[in-house]
Image (cartoon, rainbow, N blue to C red; front, side):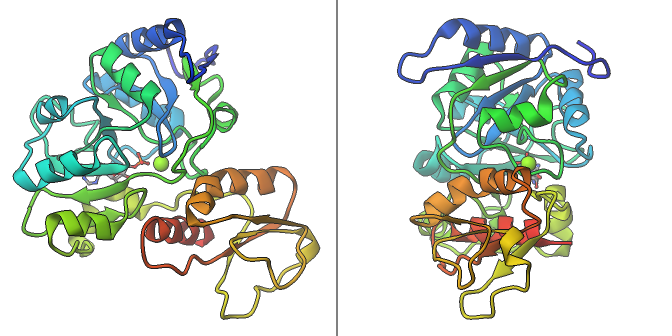
Length: 330
Ligand code: AMP
Ligand code: MG
């Protein structure tokens, strides 16, 4: 299964009401034999390989064009499986109990069984138990933790439906499992719990900071320059569509643009009429639709995107602001 030659990518749609185990079992066999399978999680679609097989993990980096020092998250289907991969302290246990399965990734000291390539050469590894049924079934049936970054080409918006995965990955991976639209829409929150006295927020995401702080009864710290280096993913431009993204703060002027060829997204109607306006009911919906809307406005030929800045301090908003800011970076 060489990645250089174009592969035939199998595509299987799964009905979550009555899931057919045959394609899922086939996907698990592909993972076991060192192949690549894209599958839904509750956050975004993941591009999975056997986390303990260095050759398989290498293929993830190749298929995505991902820098090799950007470590992967190991997806598990039980806390016992996590404990076989990393050294779990009390703070991490509390967080697992409260937030797993769910969009919270914990960075902890790695056990020797985790290959260096999966950890991007670091001493730590990142673990998460996804909530999505297909993801968990796959991990359980493959009987191995699954290393999975988002199933997009590096630098592109993360895929939140199987068609977006197909656009980026057809011919590069062995199989895509279509489990419908995701329900969170942005990636997991990543925190470094390796020192329980100083827990670091490495990436805001699907789990709100204040909920985590409540469980730990302490404030999350932001990484200084040194520890930011330890989470290399945060260095790269991410999540960006091919057209420019401009941010609108509601208190400020609407950004300059040729409005008829601009696409807008936000909770409130834009003050100027734009070519298209995608209005969301709440911040959860904004997050769920963000990446798909980036891709859609780009595909429909708009020349720029104007995104309303999410003002709220709680819940998904910190993660949503982070993704919009990164998409708007030059
Ligand atoms: P992605 O797979 O694109 O969702 O990115 C996962 C992110 O998790 C990486 O870009 C890192 O920033 C972070 N991460 C994964 N493993 C580690 C680790 N061992 N130490 C610090 N950060 C990590
Ligand atoms: Mg990603």
